[in-house]
Length: 164
Image 1 (cartoon, rainbow, N blue to C red):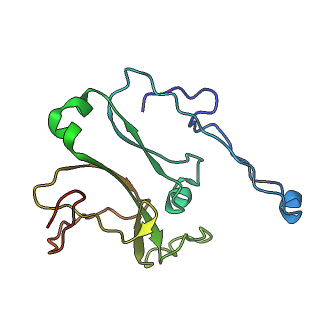
Image 2: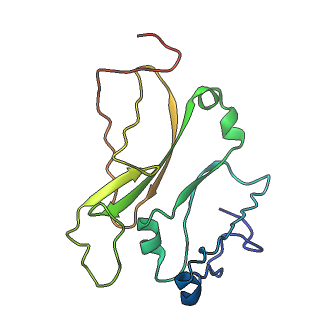
């Protein structure tokens, strides 16, 4: 995205320090940080992803599901077919062996099977009924595996407001 890195923006130079060890031992809560992204009024419409950028930790943070979706609306949203479509946000993340791995040694994940989440739900499916139009805002927030999407026919289809 074409946004400013000033203030509390998403910047590769911004640090989010954890609580000091003595505070952790005392049970003090982790610090909370807020990121504010100011999107200019003339920014191109589209679906964008966001994730931490700390050098050396990006993959670890992405696989820990620290990624998200930013939808910027604009003139494309006024196209009749898009305006009428159901807007579906799908953020696909990857866990290795069903968990967030500890990045303590090289290549230990090479043979660990991936488990995918969609919006935080493991192996979620999304229904699309015959004749229905959906606009999918799809973000592949995977650090290791290329995604292969599959559309399969399923006999039961319930669409809100439509009788069977």
